[in-house]
Image (cartoon, rainbow, N blue to C red; front, side, top):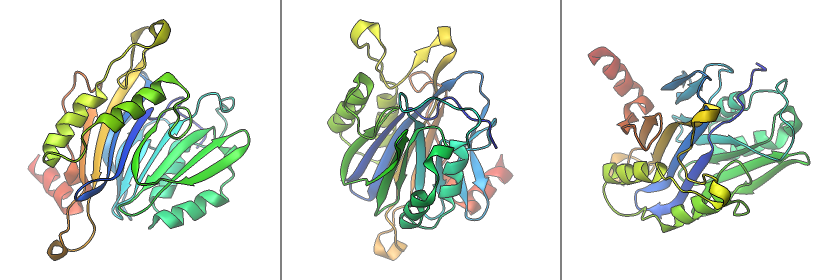
Length: 273
């Protein structure tokens, strides 16, 4: 499919091995034009089970979580090459990668793709143990390992501090207390963080929550993911948690949609609704 979104998720904060029981925590805002249709998180692929929001134009997604405990998320890149609407959908690439069983499988697939077939992007892939990022520009594709610690992705480079919003995102993530509180308490505090507003130089908005009504553009949704600790219940298994906001996080409620990750819970919710 050739139809392509102009903008995918624009702020992605990552804490890797910084919270007991949850090896990875992700908080993200998706910024997009108001007129582009999309759907709230749902099952995107049946086998393996993959869930996430859906772009109703190109049919892909900006963030996907699989039953194998893998998260794949993507932002586009600015000033890394001219946008070409005839190129392959980056959102479809997210779906293709989310079907793989391991992060190493996904890395091998990324090594084989024709990066020039897609408009420039930054992509991250994480499970409870491993992480990889990929970014493309005119020169091709660069792959790297997501190390333990705190990371931020906007529409520039991975962990970029060369522009105001990237610097602010990384500063906020580094200052945030990711380790304390229950899961629900943490989700509530991350919800507040994603509603951040701040003015930069020359009045430029560098906050995480984007409002540009004159351009009919802004933050359309948010996601908070806490990857679980793998293993059996006897071994101290902790489930993955998944929360979303539809609309600006500064004015809209946080919803726990963890049931989407488990087929039996999702089926029960449909029956009871």
